[in-house]
Length: 443
Image (cartoon, rainbow, N blue to C red; front, side, top):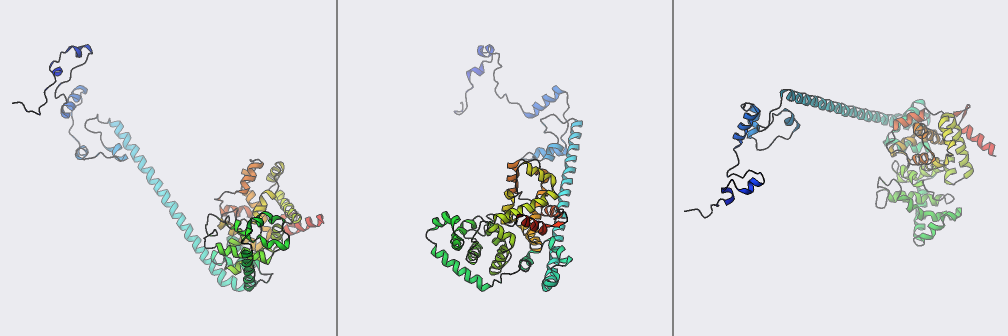
């Protein structure tokens, strides 16, 4: 009896000489046509004349694996599967050599990277040790004897190398001084007055924003509301001065207090960056004292009060030293009608805190506190010297764009090497003498 589930062979398979198969020149299918792999291999070896070799230990291991090796090592060193032609000896040797070369190159890269990491670690340790020693020197030798040591050669050299962050605020305060004799109590009074103004100006903000440019000197306290606009743009990447940040209220308080302390100056765009840098290094009241005294310096006052005559004098003095130090670039700028105000105003207004990376800007501030306004213009020439080769190939638009947005990865040591190469002496006249001469000529 036939099993009910046994499939009956098709009639067309029973007749292998069917007309249809002959017509299309095809060979009819056979039952159980699939051959055993071993038989297929034997037939292949008979056709190619290659004798069947016993499997190597590697092939035996590979044959018993449930998966195929996927690594480069396996592809290069392993023999081919048993159902494929074996590698010629020359090809196998070539692959082995290639693999060995790859291993050697990989080891070289690893060694190079390890040496680089070791060097970076050594440099970091050396830097930390240097900073630690410098902190001890500042705290134990210089600061207790400030009046007698601040102008010594040793201190000036340490100053140039950068003041350690832990003592930077104290050194800045001493270097800037307090000629205005501002006390902590005066700061509290100015802050209280600013808060009163904020309350009184809580309505009508739009009117203040629209009419600020036309305010008289006595009415500039109304610029308190304008401070809010600038704070949001102060070091936005740090996210510490914006609304809700840990230093938002502190920055707001210092700028507000200053507009009440100096209503004749009021708030000017760029002040927020200077105040922010001081806040990062000093307590609030001390930051206000340093801020007020810093803005009272002749150069800062000329710019923040927008004294066009004095500003033009500073630009003219800068160009004297520009031509002296970088004649080729100076001529290129003149040819393209690129005047100093295009790039200097932003640098001077913010003391480079907006234009340079913060740590580098602080180092510029270190020497600025030592050398005064001259160093601001020397730094400008140092930047121009550092990028002289690039700038001489640019036109007006690209130079202006480049200088108003300097590279973010500007290297500290390279910039200071460039600054050190700038000579602030023209025809045996120093910065202050050149500036006085220009003022006298205008008078």
